Image (cartoon, rainbow, N blue to C red):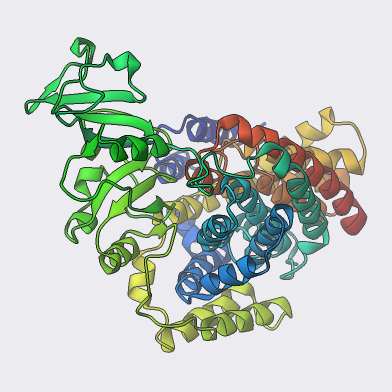
Length: 571
């Protein structure tokens, strides 16, 4: 093994470990890895910025811009109304919502499909008196499954398509992924619809609010003078106290024995319990506004508030929007409510004027979970959808490559006034895109330095002979790595290895690359493996074990059918 191959393997393993530790931002890890690759002469300086010109990167940007336009057309609100009007049984409703989500994900990135469907799920569950837990995790999984069926369903599909074209001179058509992806997705969806009603709650825990999942939130409240909680020991309170301010001074927690009238506390409490305590006068919010929790909004991967502290959200405070509470994804509790730091999947409870909230959420790229009232933009507009479907047709029938077809859609939307390119580009999730652009040159180096062939020969020497075994091993490897490393990075690293393994075994590379594309989408076992899972975990108040209970049968069913489909169609 040559020195540069050894160094590149060490670099890749080191980056995977740092990604797994999750102590540094993923774009920082990717850019640092790329810089180190250049310093070690593993990546040529001329290729440092090649990721930004890569068709996969360009197509992802285009799809994200298109999804922003489609999310503002009002079409999904109409869909929610029509689904409710069908008066279906819970299992049928679940099947319909998962089917719609998977279909959307065929034509756009899976995070975009999930973002479009989250408000629909809340509306349908509220009207049907169902717990949103029954729908949120299943649609997150359905979005990942639907993304398997087309070249634009997930960035990993675009990446392996580009890797195949670079290695063989032939690419994959728009729906070539569906030969194996569609049976795999159908198997996964069937497993979801059979298993989800068995392991997830069907109805709410409260008859008064049957469609609200139980969720612990962090909020700052005061203890009134005549509160029933006054003089009670902290251990006997129906919530956890993280900080106490008394007479304007923050107290050292171990020295606080009991609650006193006038105390202002940062409490971790079930949101339904909080509503009950406020209603009975045991607690009150720190200002004079009504004590009911306001409209909810979730922090998305592209949100500008990721990493910000609540007290620093100028986009909200300047519009008079008050953050009443927050459900944190991975809480680090210190100080007051204003000191809490936001991450992807956190849910904010906001009070303020409906139009001001709408503008604030547009500015921060957070997603409203329920209607903000009448939309001044007017009724639903089908024309942007028509333009988008035209681009899909161009790509699907081979008249243009995906990046050209969807580039034409972006131009059309901009010329029609539905897309402000300056605003759209500024609102993109640039940390994710920067990570993708930085990882692409590293993935290319794995191929050009011969490292992929070395790793492939090593795998071939330890794996039993047989087409099914080799293809299944690549899919299993992708499934194992993806919960700890984002799917795009996994595809970038494993793609050259898959091509090398196929060449060493004398087999076509398509089934091996497609096995990676399928494997990185079968990311159902942990809440941190994919942004979709992180988002719905907080929204639904799920536990870690809920992902294992539902994700295990879905993963096994989809993986088994996926391997069979790959062997049947591509070998």
